[in-house]
Amino acid sequence: MAGFPFSLAGFRFFFPAARSKVPPLHRQLEIENRQFLMSATLQSLRIRHLALVDDLRWELPGGFVAVTGETGAGKSVILGALKLLLGERAEKTLVRTGADACTVEAAFVAADTAALDARLDALGLPPCEDGLLLLRRVFTLAGSNRQWVNGSPATLSALRRLGEGLVDLHGPHDHQSLLSPERQLDLLDAFARAAGARGEYETAWRQLGALRAETAELSSAEASLEREIELLRHQSEEIRAAEPKPGEDAELAARHTVAQNSRRLGELATGVAAGLNEADDAVLTRLGELGRLLRELARLDPAGGESFVQCHASLVADAEDLADSLARYAGKLEHDPEQLAALEERLGLLSTLKRKYGGSVESVLESAAQAEARLHRIEHRGAELERLQREIAAGEKEVLRLGRALSALRKKGAPALSQAVAGQLRELGFPKSEFDIRLVALETPGETGLEAVEFYFAPRSRGLEGVEFLFAPNPGEPPKPLRTIASSGEISRVMLAVKSALAEHDAVPLLVFDEIDANVGGEIASQVGAKMRRLAAGRQVLCITHLPQVAAQAGAQFVVTKAFRDDRTYSELSAVEGRAREREIARMLGGENETSLALAKAMLKEAPNSKPQASKPEEAGRRAKKATP
Image (cartoon, rainbow, N blue to C red; front, side, top):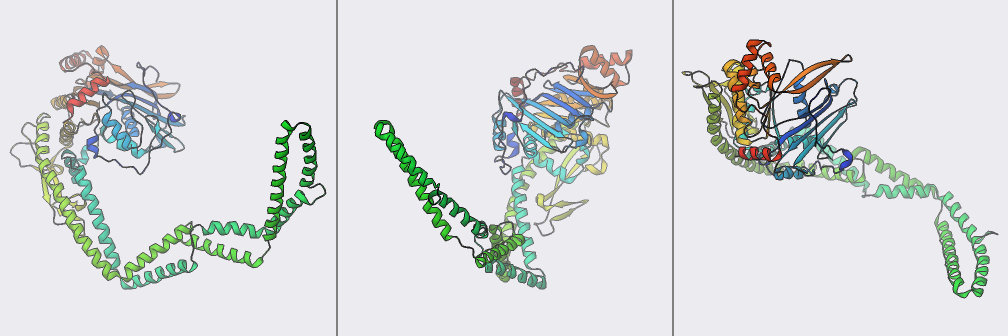
């Protein structure tokens, strides 16, 4: 991008021709996601032809990085580019006007890539080289999407799985999700490291639901079952009466081709045989004449000519064998209209079955087997229902067992998360607030799948309890459900407190906050900035903000601006340091004047960690290792 002061020296991008390994879609991760958290720093980002960005190349430092600028300058493009690299759906309207495609590329650097390489291997992707993880995505106006990881083609699903352990994105509207009981349950499970237990419970719940659905189906109205029995019996009898065999259709098609062309085949075989030994200028006659010449040659030069004579004899023998074989082949051919009609009738029958039951004879046979199995279950539904009831009883016990194991993790994690969030809130301007997490036990799993818990319904597919975040911002008031009392500014701070508690727990290496500090100001804004600065001690934090109190505490600051050239609008990014940074902070304070400049200078001077942190692999590794619990 014109005017951009940084280069991407050493930033290596691998293109499609570099590797051709395609990851298998069916391969699943063998280890719980949270155990794959990776120590990595976003080192470089390149964006081409995305919205107002023409060509942006950005090298990021580690630690706390603030991105500022006027509203509408294009700050959200950076967040959008990261989302695209992490597998979010791409809209072709994002492609810059006049361009055919948009490209987003990123490099993450890590001191130790063992965990990252394990994740890549589980996804069927190549390992990192020289401590670098390279991501690239291209989407076009035509709607096509292509993406690569370390130069190897990858799926969007693979990008999403990889991104789960690399980046935690939080946008301006995400704090509203904190009001959802389901989101609250997700946050608690993440803190309690209950993903594995919850996955086992949800799998058992789905299996139980399938058994219940099958039972309901078998217990449905008698009349509908009788109609289904009649249909299944017809399907089975129709297929079995035809007695199709695997591969039969291909064999019959070949035989039909021969029978349909028998006359012409006979003419061709007879003609070739005659040309070999019956015509006036037959090949064998000519070979005989040539043989006499070769024998004369061998008589004059025995050493050199004997091999020619032997070769000639072999040719004569082959020609005679070919002539005999063609004669026998022609003798077997006969035009039989009845045989041809029978083949056509059989092929027509198989074609009808394939059209009704599948595209191959194998699919037809599989349909017959399925129909017979279903017919057997219905006709013996009494025994089937007994079997299903036994399996449902066992399934309910398994769901209850797994649910109790999940509940134990939640009951252990809830007070710990409550305490952690309360501690974070005290640092964010709520010195005497109370925060609590209440778990409400549901009844034994029933058939409805939902249980009323005060103001909402808790899905039993997620466990044996519902959850409610309780908050009392003011002393003397009892904690109440967060969704009933908190203002938007309070919710933003509670979400930051929850994010901070989770971040310190799971050590996701890159936290991205997009205007999470909205609806706060004054001293609270300074505390929000201090919180982000502390979070950056163990990881990289990228914050898009309008608050000077937050931006001033960042280790590095970048400004997004709009430029107008040749009747086009461009979003540009540049680093600000020294006097330039003071002017930007002053602008954020309300305008550049002596008072705001003096205040900006004081804010930057007072803020700890005012210089960018290193983003070398060894530094990133030490910070991430320090943050890992």
